[in-house]
Amino acid sequence: MADELKIIDSLWVLKTAEGYKIGLTNEAQEDLGNITFSTMPKVGQTIKKGDSLIELEAEKAVSEFSSPLSGTIAAVNEAAEANPSVLDDSEQMNAWIAVLTDVNATELEQA
Image (cartoon, rainbow, N blue to C red):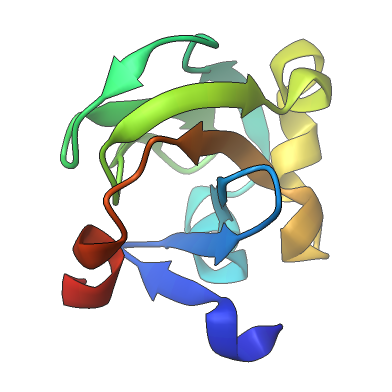
């Protein structure tokens, strides 16, 4: 699994059966501190590489993270939408933001 995990600009990307899952790295979590508010993407939304994926407010910073891939938002982490501190989870695989489908895999290879 680790060989399929790619880190791009403080986000991790993992190809799964559902699509490409994108989440917050532990380093990004440490830089932000406790996350208090998030603006999550919407399911069904089409997003381009470089577009805003998520905006986070935390004790140390307000940060916007750009999508590392183009695609369609197939799912969002509803637990994180209800409680943004879920994105502080030290098990970074739990700190996922969204799953993208209709992704051009060559974008990931070029990253």
